[in-house]
Amino acid sequence: MGAQIGAPPGICSHSAPTLKEGSQAPGRRRIVVTLTLARHGGAEYARPEATRMQENPAAPPFAVMDFSSSPINRDLSNDDKIGFYREMIRIRRFEHLSLAQYHKGRIGGFLHLYNGQESVAVGTVSLMGENDHAITAYRCHGHALAVGMGMNECMAELLGKVSGCSQGKGGSMHFFAPNKNFWGGHGIVAGQTPLGLGLGFGLKYKGLEGCALCFLGDGAINQGAFHESLNLASLFEVPIVYVIENNGYSMGTSQLRSSAYRDCLAQRAEAYDMVWDLINGEDVYEIRAKTHIAMERARKEHRPTLLEIQTYRYYGHSVADANAAKYRTPEEIERYKSDHDPIRIWERRLTEEGIATAEELKEIEKEATKEVKAAINFAEAAAPPTIEDIQHHVYWEVDEDTEAGNSGRHFFND
Figure 1 (cartoon, rainbow, N blue to C red):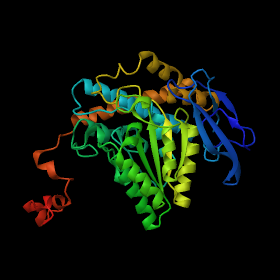
Figure 2: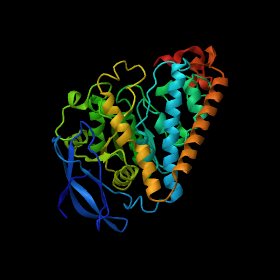
Figure 3: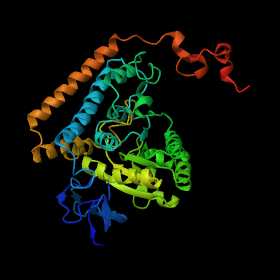
Figure 4: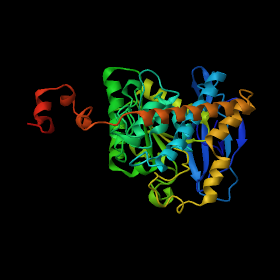
């Protein structure tokens, strides 16, 4: 099978893939892929072997393939599919009401919102097993909720309360849940990429069949630490999947103006002899289908993968992004909200498949709003950290009341 079709690269049902018309994202390139026959779990599917992107604004919209029949998706129950919607809408409502808390002056520091990207966290995290781990950058609320962190501990952290997941010391950028294999958000751009590498290497060292999911933004791909990590991941065959959440603008500069590349960002993996793929971030089915292949490659073969998921954020880089309305037109933002919103697209899938009615989905959204409001009440009533807490949960020596902790020598190497 060597025909080229205008569609994002990835797996599909080999027998008769269903093509649906979609709109080409503004500023993005037309995607063309060569598919070859492959097998997975006893089923045949089309695997991408060569991908290229055409810079041709006049080209017709590329067709979007239906990944609902891919091996990892065909056995999903109705409850599973409704669960994806519930998790995405919970993230959306959490972010929306968090912004309201910020405007009321109850949240200090930064606030990086995930609105528009919910399908990425929900779709990828839904594939995690017992020995899989996740780590991300500072836009971490969606991933935290997707792995199962409670809204109370997350909202309390935003409000700087001691009952927050990081005892009120981390704020928006530093949600952590080691008990859920979630190793947190990290404020240094690309700083999480070598840490994710370490998570993957640890799995291999211990002989565990698992993989590390390391999320990063499109701006982080130009950092040296990221390239060092890719080199080591490929060199030492580390079971890791790097996921670029490409929302197109880094901090506030378009991808075309800030990054040099030939076809797409993920293609840089070729320099490190690493497999890569490109994913339409609007579609939960496609995210799961392609990410599953990458995670299985890591678990079974100890081969790393670089994925690029094309997505979009509705707000600025953070609430401190004063130019958020200047480097993008209002028309562009509204076009994404109306035509490319992952939650609304999934709603249509659920109703078209007869899984849920519009009224049932609206009720789920109302429940999510109630849950966030309850978390706000919890956070407002919670106590702030004390001065005595300033070194707790920071230094092991302090928490364990050792001599070094009591004398202050834990700050030094002697």
